[in-house]
Image (cartoon, rainbow, N blue to C red; front, side, top):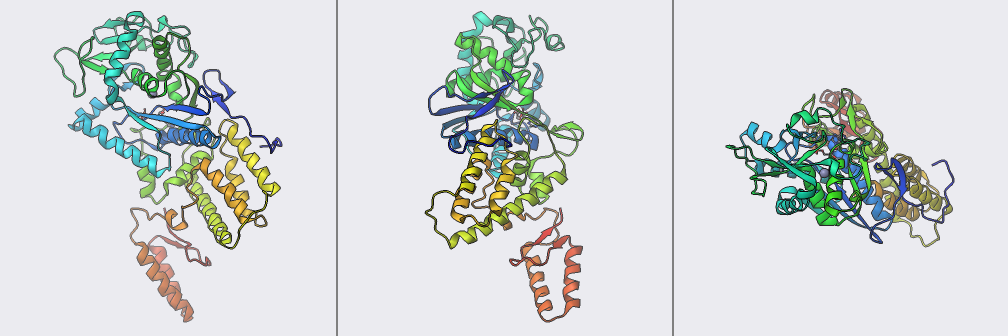
Length: 488
Ligand code: AMP
Ligand code: ZN
């Protein structure tokens, strides 16, 4: 935000397109609309917080498009079939594997983890998309789609129907890969013509049966994961649509394969979506976060430790979506403290608002800050500088509170921190391990207050020590007596 923005004109929205590896000005396919498809979770396990970074990013994109005045049509899919343990076309179906290991029905597993994912979506204040498309609801369309491209672009092997990536122009341009790339992938399946060829229909092996299988011209079986996203995005958004999003790992295999199918099905060389956007990873010290290594960092674990989920959202927004973000408990607790300060600032602003009514034209400082907001967010969703901008706005005591509140609301339309309703008390989640309840703490604080009033400082100190021993930190001097917290 070093350059001086032109305060009068809206900034053009620039988004980094992974296809060209450059920021491009967003021009919608359909005037006034923005059609966005986001690759959703594979519901064989809980999402970890790294997975949720992908949806905080997609939400920031959606909020930005809405704020810029576009009618947003957003689709997020739920992969409940077809995603193999190895993206490079080998291994087992993740859901079949989970069901076998836990001796449970696949449908129950999918339902349980879809609901858990939706809980996280809600807790992170991620807006509901226009459509949640569930892969198993689209299997007939997937079979029709595969039939339409089979003759020209596919071949059969004992394992099912394979897509021949050499039949489309410029395969792998998104990953900057070629048909020959992906060594190791070819060995996994005998008879593949090119290393990068992939199954669009996986036949159930003779003599076996799967919990999820459908009849098809290539035998009983299940659709491939890449096919699902091509079919659902085209069915719900039409081709070409505006933006396709996912984590950076999808840039290498999943999205190039979707693009190849889109080319085959549409008969054109366009990629299906005009802009492909990818969020970078949340990493921990050991590297990429995974569900199997170390402590399984799911959102519920953060909540159990007394950290409000919106502190995690703020932590994500403090980094640009294309940067790696290293997770640490210290960073997360710092984000929580920052969020508390912001919320206290908003509460003070609300107090001042009660006494004011504004009808003046916007103060030049507010106009300037709004332009700074626009220039940052329009610059490939550059959220990090928006947070100090918000903090500056809260500290501008001399400017009319109504005007400050109006801009604050706009900022929060973008950041989604729920600042209109979030209170300090909401942020004080008791850790699951806490040995003392909020009411007990409040009661003890009342007693301490009475002791102090009676100048019985020995008793007051004894209560303080007792609370400290139970993990309660007291920060004296807050007029609302909110300043206590249970140590995390
Ligand atoms: P999955 O459920 O494995 O299909 O992943 C859901 C989404 O999370 C995909 O868009 C992935 O690219 C993304 N993703 C996976 N791991 C991470 C991570 N550590 N940080 C950010 N995004 C991730
Ligand atoms: Zn996908």
